[in-house]
Amino acid sequence: MLRDPCPPLALALVALAAVLCFAATAFSVHGLRPELAWVDAQMSVYLVGPWAGMLRAGYVALAIGILTLGIGLYREPPRPRRSAAPLLMFAIAAASLVVTAFAPMRFPDEEQRLVHLVHGTSAQAAFLCATTGMSLQAWRLRQAPAWRRISPVLLGWALACFTGVWVLALFRNLPRGLSQKALVAAIVLWFGFVAWRLWREASRRHRTMGETPRICC
Image (cartoon, rainbow, N blue to C red):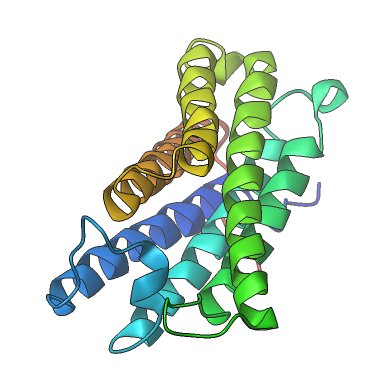
């Protein structure tokens, strides 16, 4: 019998490591940029200037983690009940996140350029597609026996994040840095928790079935 070239255990480990990498770089860059008021400065501000490259690497890592986690979660429900819709949303979110990292935002003293529009559009796409994918994935996971009890919590969490995206878009008088970072933290924590949960379930199955995990290539 052919072994799965990308077992869930390997996918979960890659996703969890990627999420932790993003969290570490984000915290580090905030500490390395004391001249920026973190309550007011959006994440995009840290993508320009000193240490921007480190945060961009964190964005790329998170994109890899989102896509990898989506692949792993796709195969959790029984085959007849799987849906590619969450994976598609995660793939778009991951691509948008990478574009956001490398297309700089517009600062108040700059003229509007195409690259600034690309940044704004891709950032919104990353938020919307990530939270939509989270909601769809949590809904689909109710079909997986190992996830049935936790799926309502994941769905409520995801819907709260989806609502947060619209709150940020509609209420412009909120502290931009603080409100955006709170939303980013909630989304990243969801991905981190789900990656950990996938790793735990995959480890349990590995012990039960005696499979030998291999890192996908």
